[in-house]
Picture (cartoon, rainbow, N blue to C red):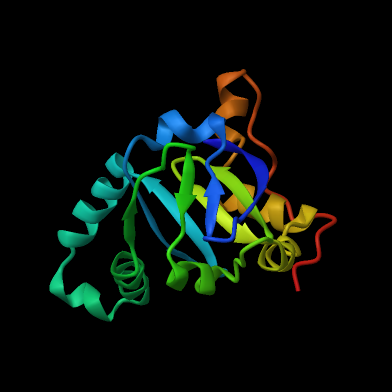
Length: 167
């Protein structure tokens, strides 16, 4: 699921699920909190796979910050289905988490295996992180592009700090 849409929340806290995402979400999906104060919407198969991974975690993992965050994310979830008009009813506690208000625009992003729902102010604040430098560093950490380059017979990008501020 990829793409960006904007739809207003109605007076009951509902937002239209864009046509592009309806089939991938299915008839039942999960809403939960996400970092940066947004709402994540997972199709059930994706959610169930995540749940299985978390459930199989070692008891010692409960002191791990990532595990604790994921447990809070699971604990804040709501199971949902679209209504007849393909609207998604967002529970109040999730709207409050994401700063989404009735009558205001929600930013709906397809983020691969999930959707993200953002309030415009939260999205604008988070978007300040999207700089060319941050994108290049993230791509390098994820080795993004190196597999595609090698698949096309090109050598991977040089691992050089030349021209980059490394302080």
